[in-house]
Length: 184
Image 1 (cartoon, rainbow, N blue to C red):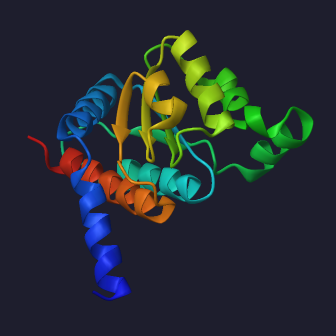
Image 2 (spheres, helix red, strand yellow):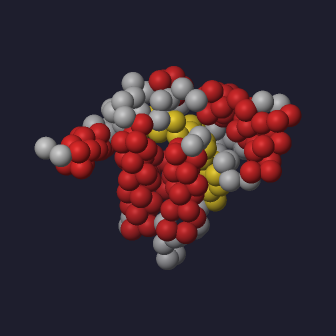
C-alpha cells in the first residue's frame, strides 16, 4: 500500500470513529440556536483556527435556507488586531475568554476546536462559557484531552494524527452546515 492509500484509509477510519449521536446533538443545538437567534462563537488555534473560520462561513453563508433565520456565527480567531492585543496585553491563554467577556449571553453557543483537546486558550474559554450558562461544544481528537470532559457536547475524532483530526473536523463542519441547509 502506498502512502496516499494509507493516508486515505486512515482518514476514513478516523471519520468512522466519530459517534453519529455526537454529530446529531450538535446539529440539533445549532438548529435551535438559529431559531432562537442565539450567537455562535467558534475558536481554535492553527489548523483548528482555520477550521473555525471555515465553519463560520459554512453556517453564515452555506447553511442559509429559504424561509429560515440566518445563523449568527463568528470566529474568535478572525479579528487579528483584537486577538493580538489580548495576547500581548493579557496573555495568549486568554485571547478567547476576553472576547467572550465582551459578547457572550446566556444560552449562546461556544464551540472549541482543538486537535489535542488541550489548548489552554480554548479550555479557558469553554470554562468561562460553562460558568456563564452558554452551551459548549468541543471538537477534539487524540484521546479527547481535557476538552472532551469540559464541554457539554463533545465530538471526538479517535485519531492521534493531527492532520487527520483536522481533516475530519473540516469534513464534519461541511456535513453539519450542509445538513442544516437542507433540513426540513
